[in-house]
Length: 586
Image 1: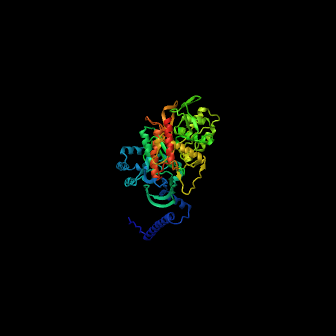
Image 2 (image 1 turned 180 degrees about the vertical axis):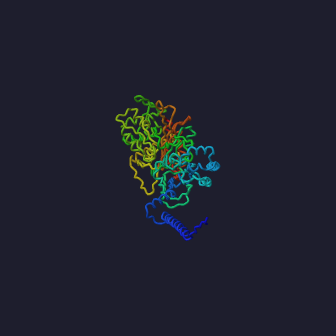
Image 3 (image 1 turned 90 degrees about the vertical axis):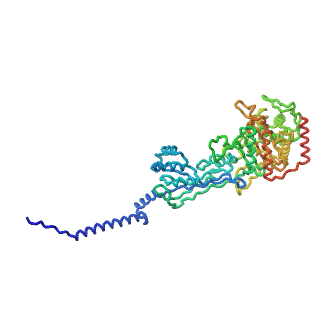
């Protein structure tokens, strides 16, 4: 057989093919680089490129909310009452967190201060969710311990937590915010829109674990809330709260509240309530403790409106302060009811009717007046309409209007039954007397630059001064309010002891003790109302329970406000002596 002839290789053709393939690969690489550059660097000209770029940004760039700082609340002297402090909130994506090891989860639970078993149970509950809070409102130091674990799916965000430096002393007035720093009660709720501010927005770059690796830009700055200044003077607030708390405890009372007004401006200088609560820790707090009784509760004021009835009598022109009124034999019969005095005061004048708080005397005066005349005066003094503080739930009170008044209805109305007021309304009415008949709007908020509202004249100055003189006798040694006296100052005021309504009408053993007044009587600075609900001790009258609170608070207030002591004029000493003698004769 002949030998097979081998085919010789063609090296030229092989090199050509190699170069072709290599060139094509290089072109592909260049095309890929150009394509990537078009997607990432070069100005986008193609809609497809723009779409892909938007998709890329959507997977790495996020828009986050910037928490807005809530406005602070201060008193009239700038003392801080409410402030928001920065805190960290830790949250997680359970879908990512469930990939962590058991050891990592135990470390996370420990950093959060949560038992491992309880934490595992929570994770199981949220296993199919994309979001869960791990811990709200942690201090930055606490939050850093959690973040230092560097676990996928665990994140933090900045928030604010409200803090109230005065605690329970201003709790019902200020109210509080919820965990999201939104107002829920009190002034925090009433002025939520002003205090809250507006959150901002920023763009950030996130990594695969959802952590922020770069801040890109602030799209919208957070707008902080407006600060708010109250008319409250914390020196008087602390004083009123302390004495009120002591009186409620000493008398075994169910509750108590006190309001102090600046008679010259209408500003509320103090508004204290008992029982109270700590707004910084509301765990286990009862709803009743959160109520601002001074504005929300409406009550029958009892004998504290007798001076207003006397004022209506003076306005009628048929009465003067020394007009005699026969209260013998110590009671008066009306259809369906007999009204009694503690003793038979006999023939006394209108002033002594107020001094002794004579039920019979004020009833006889009321029977001699037109009912609508009396009601119209009460309305002018501010009863029966909201004072307009803007506080949520402020009670307007009830001032009845009838086409026909039965005698007992008119008598009750004249000495404070059958109508309701709140403590601020009653304080405003006494402030009108203190201001010689001028009525000023009541205010809780100080607004810089705002012009003070003009006072409205509702009573003639002469008549207001005559009623003031009557109210001074109540604080004398023979008056029902002698325990409201303030050494070195003339005080004007009136006691009230009111039967509370029960399931079957007025209860014989449940009382409300009230005192309303102002000081100094000659040149008034402060008007105040004290209400003690249901004292359970032997003492229950307004003169025994509420008047001492007024006296102690006013004694401290005169010193704090540096009001110079007054000299008691000889004429006033003689008046006190005459009243003592007339009281002994009775």
